Image (cartoon, rainbow, N blue to C red; front, side, top):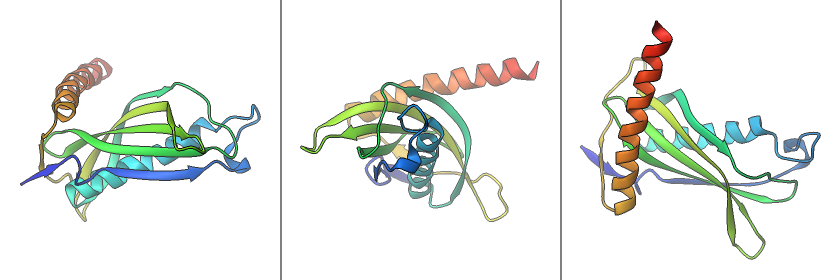
Amino acid sequence: MEKTVAESATEQIQILMPADINGAGRLFGGKLMEWIDVVAAVVARRHSGHDVTTACVDTLVFGAPAHANQTLTLKGRVTYVGRTSIEVRVETFIEDLDGERHSINKAYLVLVAIDEHERPVEVPRLKLLTDEDRTEWENGERRRELRRKRRAEHLI
């Protein structure tokens, strides 16, 4: 079975409230990480048709701050799949009142599909339809190899 990137793509919108803001007047990084994890999980659940667990936050880059009363948009999409794992990219944007979006964060997470006994289960293959899909897949292969090397280094 195969699924396309579009079949599981997810978008979440937040208006930043005072409780989301730290003492420096910016969005708490941990709050953003929570939202990113939720978006990634929704994407992975939609792709796999199973519950998932986060295995790795591969890359998380904070590029710009966000402040109270701004609209935040998080967009998630599958970029790569293994046998039981799903790599998801979540991009975060600040949305101006005129609808223009400015990127503030990009994250790659790896989630594993699990059954009712919390054992890994196979996931559908990813059907690559666009040049962006293919580029993300190729980059995902490289990220997967880097993750394997890092794991091997930590086992020594």
